[in-house]
Image 1 (tube, rainbow over the protein chains, first blue to last red):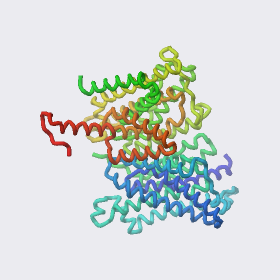
Image 2: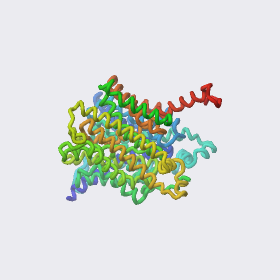
Image 3: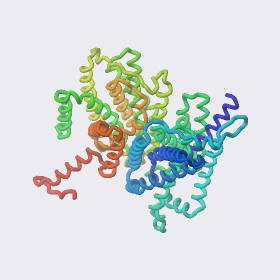
Image 4: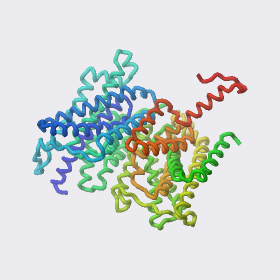
Length: 301
Length: 325
C-alpha cells in the first residue's frame, strides 16, 4: 500500500469516525443516564439526514445563498431531536422506566419500525443527494493528497467540540451535576430536590439531537437510502459496546478505532469492510468484557 | 390424560385437518409453522430472561445449509437436508454460544446482533460462493426417496412443518419442566443461587442457547424449502427482531405462544400488506407498542388470565374465591 493510499484511508477513517462518534455518543449518553438502549436512535440519524437534505434543497431552490445549507444542517438536527425525541420520551419512555429491560428495548424497536416506515412514506425509496456544504468548503492539500475540507476539518472539529462540550457540561455545570446525580441514584437525587423527570427528558432530547446531527452532517458525504438507520444503529452500538456502555471518552476512542479499521479495510480487503467493526468489538470484549473504558460490574445477587 | 395433553391433541388434529377444508391456506400455514420453530427458540431463551436480536443467523444457517447441500447433491433428500441443518446450526450455536453466554441482557442481545451482522455481510459480500444479495435457489428435494409434483410437495411440507412445530413445542415444554430447564429459568430470577447449588450458569445457558439455535436452524431450513430460496435477508437483524416481536405478541410464558404469535403476526402482516401496502410496518410497530404497554403477557397470557378469572368466578366451584378484581 502506497503512502498516498494510506493517507486517503486515514482521511476517510477520521471523517467516518467523527460521524459515528456523534451518533454513538448520543446513544451511550442516553443509556448512561436513562438505562435505555434506544434502537430508534438509528431512525433519528436517518431522519436528521433526510430533513437536512430536504431543507437544504428547499433553500437553494428558493434562491437563497448555498451557505445557508450549513445552518440548515444544524436546524434540521435540532428540530428532529426536539420534536421526535421530546415526544418519544414524554409519551412512551416515561411509561417503561420501571419495566424489564427486554421490554424497554422492544418499545424502542417498535418506534424504530414505525419511523422507518414514516421515512419511506415521506421520502420514498429513491436516493437523495445534497453536496453543497461539501463543495463550498473546497479541498485541502495534506501530505501530497487532496481531500475535501468538509471531511478533514469540519467533521472532526465538530466531533471534538461535541466531546469537549459534553465533558465540560457534565463535569463543570450545575445542570451536568444534576444529570450525574440522577444517574448515580435517582431517588436520592429526587430527595434533594432535583427534578429527575426533567433531567431524563432533556437528556433524551440531547442524545436524540446528537443522532440527528450525525445524520445531518453525514448527508453531504453520502446518498440517503432506506436502511441507513438500521445500519447506523448496529454500528453505533458496536462503538458504544467497545467503549464500555455509558462511556463518553471511550466512545471517541472506539469510534476512531472502528472508523480507521473500516477505512483501511476498504483499501486492503474490501470484502471485510463491513466486518471490521464487529471483529474489533468482539476482540475487545473477549479481553475486556465490559469494554475499553467500562468498569467491571458486580454480579447481581 | 390431563386436560393439557387433550387440548394439545385436539389442536394437532384440527391443524392436521385444515388442508382438507382450506387447501389455499396450506403454504401460508406452513410458513407460520416454520417461523414458530424459530420463535420457540426465542421463547426458550426468554425463560432465562435473555433476548437475542441475532437468531436470524441460525435461521440463515439452516436455510443456507439446505441450499448448499441441495445444490451439490442436485436436489438432495428432505430428511437428509433437515438433519444437516440441525448439525450446522448446533455447531454454530456452540461456537457463538461459548462467547455470548458470558454476557447478560443488553450485551447478550446486541452481541448476538453483531454476530448475525457479521454472517449477513459474509453472505452478501462473498457473492461467488453465496450468490450475494440474490441468494441461492433451493431446488425441490425428494422426500425419503420419492419425488413429488408441486401440489403434492406443498402437502408434504405442510405436514412436515406442522409435525416439526408440534414436536418441538412438546419437547421444549418437557425440557423446561426438567431440572435443566428449571435451572435455565433460575438464570432470570437468581443466577448466583444457581451457582451456589453447584451448577454453572454459563453451561446451563449454553445448553439452552444451542437448543434455541437448532430450533431456529430448523425453522430456516423449512422456510428455505417452502420459499425455494435462501437470501442474506434471513440473517438481517430486522428478521431476528421479528422473532422476538412474535414471541412477545404470542406470550413468552408458554410454548403455545410461539404458534399463536406466528399465526396472528403472519395474518396481520398479510392483511395489513394487502390493504395498506406501504404502511404495514407502521401498523406492526403500533401493535407491538400496544401489546407491551397494555398486555405484556401476550395473547396466550391474556387468554390464561381470562380463563383463570372465569374459573374463579364460576359459582359451582367447590371453593368460593373472589374474582381477581
